[in-house]
Length: 189
Image (tube, rainbow, N blue to C red; front, side, top):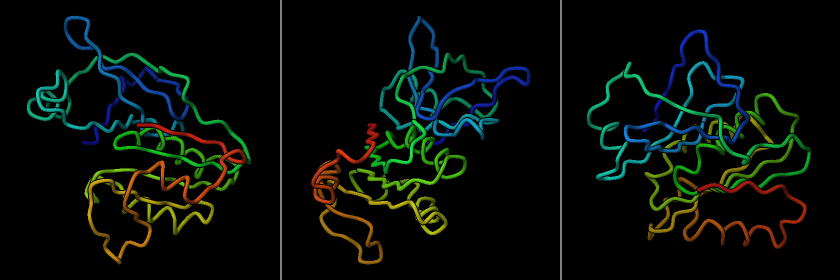
């Protein structure tokens, strides 16, 4: 689920692409979620949340919270941040680990200096590549971006999607790049 948080009108949350925030729950509990939106488009903070049956927050979020509900958050948190550079970058995401990578991609493509970017997104099945259509649009719009979806539990590939592979995401990266020493590598999930 994509969750969009609107901060009070007088507050801002300055953050860097890749950082996360904590949702503060009763009893001192916290749940961490990467910010998927980039800093230059943060009127709504975008989070990607995977449903966890019996989860202390996701049960409430998926079944009871309604639009406009108030949440307490704390952030930004984390040192996993995008660094401006001309060096080509390999970005590796697993599942909802795509969220901080999306923030970095949007920042790099919309605001940063041009650099070669290759996103590898690992998921179990094709349906788990939940923003695949958006990424394919970006690949058409931004010639410096490549995208490979890697499916670990699928048994066949659909020939209409030549950017997909079967297997493990890290194996796909290593099959394409004998060495990563000339790349900046960002990995999440």
